[in-house]
Amino acid sequence: DHGELWDTSWSVSAVSGSSVSTWVEGRALPYRFERTLTLSPGRLHVEYRLSSTVDDVRVLWAAHPLFAQRPGTRIELGDAPATLVHYGEGERPVQTWPAHGVCVEVDLAAGASQKIFTHPASEVASASLIDPDGAFLTMSWRREEVPCLGVWLDNAAYARHAVAALEPTTWSDDGLDVAVGAGAAWIVSRDRDRRWSLDVELGCRAV
Image (cartoon, rainbow, N blue to C red):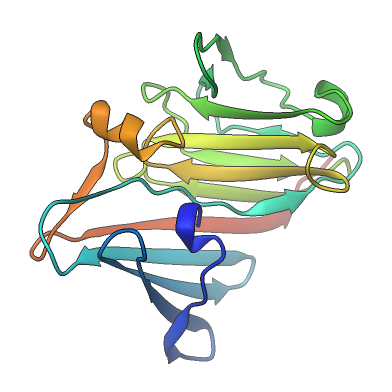
């Protein structure tokens, strides 16, 4: 999970043979963030709950799993056409994610990096990493819970090798102030929490 939770130590609240529940309290804002991870064959299910002890706390959430890219690994964004906006100052160019996917080492210059978001109107609810041998990892979520996706591409600009982060998120920007200005920030209160989930599937496709 992105932001201040990226480097935060978590406390464990429950453990079973196939799941673990953890929690952490916010530093910049008064919230409690709970996460339960449940394993089944070929799948990881993640349940989230966000709550607060005060009223009207505005938050922006994004997952932040960072994956090493093998030579030829492609990133595909679901079945729906994906309209994208590039992150950064000033003009934000709009384009469409290619149907054949993106390969970090092929489509991004060596030493370069790029952050892209799906437009809130896009109907993207999954993203996959697909290796040349057909092995894949797919993340999926409910758009009514999490409307956007951020994709961080890094061809050895900050990492030692090509990496990519698939970041389902509540808004198409990394700034909480931008989400608040757009009326897109989540609001949590004493009697108004937020619950949502993600699924991660591992498998192999025929090639």
